[in-house]
Length: 139
Image 1 (tube, rainbow, N blue to C red):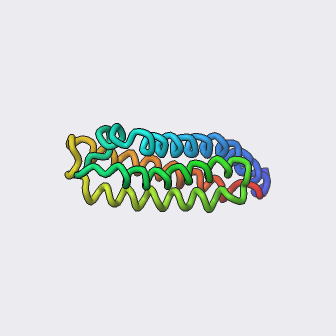
Image 2: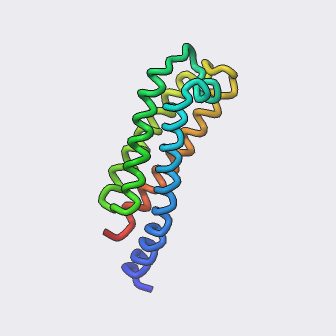
Image 3: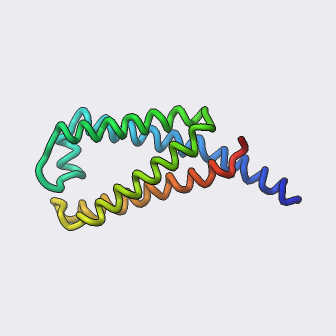
């Protein structure tokens, strides 16, 4: 098989993987944002106890996750939106993970710090994987 044919076949596979990944990422961001907006106390106690609770700030952050979720869901059917949305998500999760690494010992209970850090790295990795696939997908 010629190199161009192999690349085209791989691009079709990567494009087929992108839609479910974008759906998963989009729905997960919407779910996270909704939990933060509708039940900030529950979210704080479950995964975000790094000091004083501030429901207004948690709802402010929720708006970011809701917006990212909507953009990712739009990107499912708009290929031109994919790379920018995924690059932004990867960058945000990378910076968010770095922030959690710096405060890893400040969580209550103590296991939340490492858990949050690892979770953010894994989700950021999924954004990077999808970004790479979007670069290989046909336009």
